[in-house]
Length: 138
Image (cartoon, rainbow, N blue to C red; front, side, top):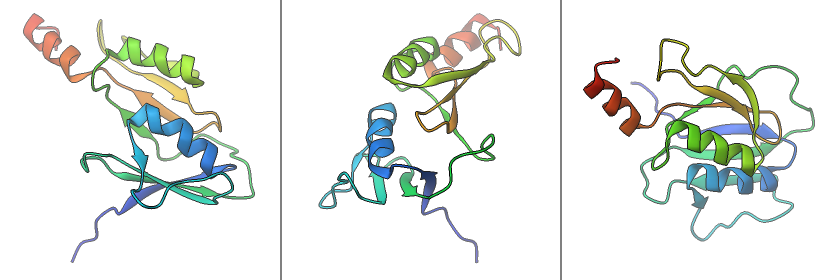
């Protein structure tokens, strides 16, 4: 019998602050009836539509030291990749690497880091991919 992923856990220095930072990035909310509050050492956020995976932030004593071995690849729901990157940077993300155009014009992604240094990527939106297919560039 196989297992399934219950949720993704992210080690961090401040579970509440990081969960609050990620909520608008993912469009997530606190678990109904179990709000995250300052001082909580474990903070879960969920997709309000129930479509996405749950994310649990866990406080740990050690700081992040290296590149993540596991990370989120995010696809914008409403904005383009570049608009989403600009918004995330305004929201406090740091750009780590720009791989736009990595596989030709209109392709690629951008690697960002959250306020605690956890990397994540922003990919092109589904609309951008569909437009590239129509134009024959993928």
